[in-house]
Every structure is written in structure tokens, then in C-alpha cells.
Length: 490
Picture (cartoon, one colour):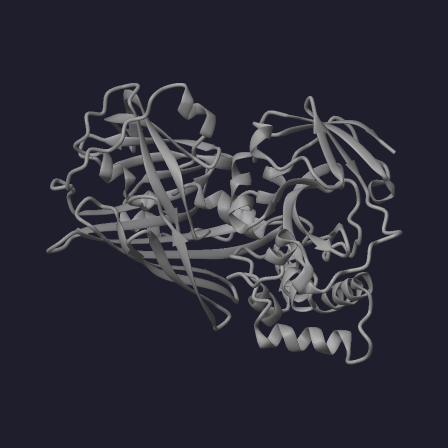
């Protein structure tokens, strides 16, 4: 039963963590962080580095990075290629980044591209004072957005070079503002100097500095050579990078790919749920993660003393929907288009008109069911490893839960129904898998799962994040850490 797990955004974010620095916000309060010295980087050397990417002991791809000094500043080029297994399907993923950097290695302008099968996402942008002005393109559709920035921002690929020349003493902690092109958002990151230790590179023992780097709740470890070159990086789901030669990096990966990422990330509870879709109430104990970073409270969910209670909604007695212009501010926010939820595009608007017809408008509940039924009949459930967006999903007529949720949100908004994307875990075949679904305002907020064809969604949908794409990416810090104990379900 393919397509039931949150593979698109969450899996893409999972292997992007090999290059993104993840931070635990609370940890910053336990020791003071240093700011980088306010000076130009005069000693950053030209670099041309090749890294093999492994998941556990299996090589699944490579990363190639070049940093070149220019007359003023630097030029960065990075290419990442991976072969990924999701639910038994092997897919090739390609990411390219090109950036112009200022003399202190902060970001001036960038170009980013992600390709996976028939799906492609690209973005280019430039720093302009207090914002990054960005142009995104997906499925031939372009959109401009401005991302506010508080101070200079860096790409994760340059942070190791930026630390060169600082006094890297054990226990020192540095802060950065990192921009992630994959989610179009800046965030604060930290790097803590652990100390010096030798590591094995091939047959040679090489002296290195060990650095703990973290962002968005995920921590990983890097080992840096005496010349400032990255030798090894270890992160999520058994993934790591190892310095290698161009010939080894480019050698054939073979027919196999990574271990199944959906299975590797899934959470096994203490016992089974016999009838998941028949549950009205589910109570589980959440542990292993900082729950204050998650959106566990609100709507049909309550959370207290580590116990999450989920109650399936009753659709009886839905209030009437007020006119869009009289909706409260929150609901109006989720009527607007977004870069990946292109509800104002004519292809989506005309599709919605053809589904709902020209007769007297039906209730929002009936409209939502008509839209969901069209998606169920026309979008093939299939794992996709790309940036999920509504237009690409409509064009390719396939996708997993992320693509279904993005398209459903766009179609609902085009119909005048406020819609959000929620992300978390759902119970399936004895385990909880990462998943995405929707929250629709039908007079009040109600969950809906276009992939499962559920309105409302069953009580095993455990919401961890809601709202924007970067809030979903924050769930990367949960993978491999969260535990679930089923207390009771009725």
C-alpha cells in the first residue's frame, strides 16, 4: 500500500541534513555562544572536495563542492547526487547550488535546483539589505517572495571555511544565521568545538578537529582536517559523508540504493492497534523529544504530562461558512497562495470550477468531499522525493502524502476554503510512519487526508507540526528520537 508515508518533504529534509547544521534551541542557554569575528576572511583557500555519501555501510551517492576566490569574495558550487529507496522504489535525486559570497563568506546571491524524476524545483535569490529577494520556479510557474533576514546569512556548505582563523578551543560555541534554499527560510545554527582527535581516512590516521553542529533540533558531527578540509560528517538515519577521490565518488553505485527510508524512520509502539480507522479516541505517551518544539495542542488534540490525546472530529452541526472577506485573520491567511501551494494559478482554479460546477454553491463540506474524490481518482499514490508542490503534482498526476496535501490545500483555497498542511505520524501496519495531511476550515477546523480518503482523518493521525513548509522541516529533529507508548484507544 504505497504512498502512505511522508517521504517527499520529510525524506528530502532527512538527507539534506547531511549538509544543514541542526541546532537544539534549549542547548544554547547552557553555555554562552560566541559571535564570529567581524572581519573579512582573507585566508579561505580554494577548495575542490569530493565526498562519498553512505547510509550505514552502503554507498548511496556523492557530493562535490568547489570554493573559488574571486576578485571580490568567493564563488561556491555544490552538486549532490543520491540513489534513495522509498517503500521499495529506487529514485535518483540531484541537488545543485551555485552562490556568490561576500569576502566574509556571507551570502550575496544564489541559485538552487532539485531534480527527482519528473519533479523539479528551482530558486534564485539575492540579499538586498534586510531581505532575501527570491524567485522560485516549479512546473513552469514563477513566484517572487521576500524572506526577511536579521543579519548576515551563510550557506551551511561554507560554515567550516568561515570558522577558519577563529580560535577553535574545546568548549567554544559559535552562532550563525543559516539560509536553507530547500525551505526558503533562515534559522540560527550553532557549532561547538569538541576537541582534537585522529580519524581514519583510508589506510591513514589523520589528525582532526571534532565539531558538533546543529540546527532545527538535529545535531550532527563533523571532523575537520588541519587544513580546514571536511574529512567526515555523520548525521541522521545512519547517513554520513567521507572524503574520497573523484574517481571513487563518480564510480557506479550499482543497482541497490539506501535502506528503505520510510521503514528506517518509522516508530514502533509498544503494542498494536486493531482497528485504527474505527477509533474515536487515542491516548499515547510521547517521549524522547522536546515536546515544547512540537505543535501537540489545539483542535482535536490535547497534551498534558507527556500524554497526547487525539479525538476524531464529529462533522455534525458544522457552523455555516461566513463570506471569505469576513473570516477571522487566521483563516484569511490560509486562503492565500504560497510558493508551493499555487491556489491562484489558472490551471488549479479552472480545475476546481470544473469539479464544483456552475450550479448553486454546495456547502464547504460537500465541496471538500468532491475535491478529495477527484484527487483520489486522478492522482496516483506513489513515493516522490522532491519539493512537494501543487502544480507539479497536478502535472505529473502522481505523488505521496505531501503532494496530495499540497494539491488539496491549493484546490481548497481556490474554492474559498481555508486550508493548512499538517505533518506528523500515522499508524499503519503496526508502526507509526511520517505523514502529511490537511486541516480545512468548514465552519470550524476539521482534519482531512486526501491520500487515505478520510474526512475527518482517523484518530491515529498524530499532529506534530502545522502551517508552513519550514515548520514541517523542523520535524527532522524528531526522526530517530521520538518514542510512542499506546495507552488506550476506543
